[in-house]
Amino acid sequence: MENSILNKKEIQVDIFGKTYTLMYEGDHKYLMDVASYVDEKMKGISSGANIIDSFKVAVLASLQIAEELFNARKELNQNAQAGDERTAALLDLINKNIKEFE
Image (cartoon, rainbow, N blue to C red; front, side):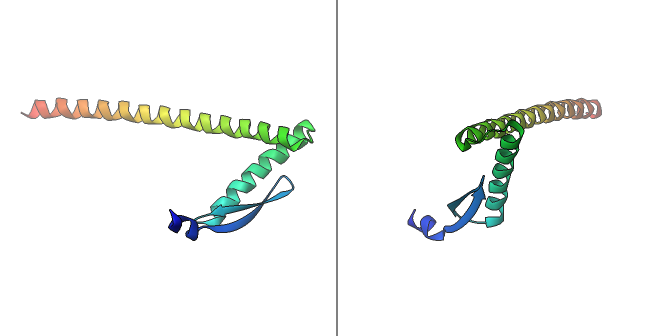
């Protein structure tokens, strides 16, 4: 576990007008992109609803991002299910063709 701590680096990100120092491991560009995404969500909510309270903006942004996550998971599950159904149909077709050649 100590090696994990030693490998981490600090990075500063700006979100909704505040600077946060985060520890990261790996690609810092990815973390910068994530922070930028959160910043954009918060700014969009703040300007669209004229909300100044950063806590309220953060909660609303979190809800919006969570909704996106839930929708993405739902779509992924639907795609996986459709893929499973296509695979089963192909296996049935293959098995029928194999029986015809036996």
